[in-house]
Image (cartoon, rainbow, N blue to C red):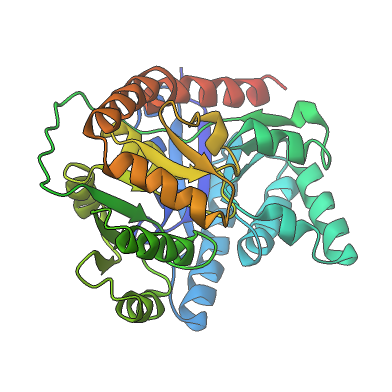
Length: 353
């Protein structure tokens, strides 16, 4: 019997960020045993001209695939702003061919985008309701989207990772923290710098790597201004191999974001047995319990962030205890292969109708 065909639409795998990691993980998982997946890339970071070019080409590829590949389901990975409008066109095109459509929403700040003006709000609501299923990253986002579309249209599918079993030994003479994400205000980078400055003034020792693209030069300037050059190394963008190398040698992850879905950085760090310091936003509180497998603070709470950092910097046993808990959580709840059975259930629910 032929396997059901799924057309997957999303960013280029050469691009950066969590959405790309999610698409890669799905593609490399066992779900291929039960479904025939074809992926079409609609976006890559670059000049306006290059972005327009890849999107126009992708529309032709999607049109041809709808006619010749004849997928039963079009699985669209989407964020906000330009991503939403590009994917809205693809959704409408898919519906012209009467295909079932999943909108897999990865946006960390969709609420701000949705509420920006009334005309846009009406259009977004129209598009979301045209989808057969919204896949969201957390129960918190399920509740939010439940105010826009019927709740039976929404399914929660957590991001996942391929769980690892290898034993990792860390022997840093001074504990090392890692920030992994786009450098800037939204991810709380500047709050982190202020907190590290406060720790240094209290002679609490630690080192930090800041890894990611974004406002790299602005961050480097502040590091020098705060006299933190010996404490902080700004690495800039790192690839997946470099990320794994970092996760194997640092002692904890800190990501004091102002809004999120469910960051891959947190799940990847937990997989490597790291405790987490983050914030009460998005799906993070569904993964991290304050003072159990990490610390959670309110976004912008610099004193709370400094206190959480100090707790992990001065207590090696606590770091190991929290990190060990995180490896168990990943194995039990966020292993990609287990999550793919949930994605398969979503596919099957649409194939039956």
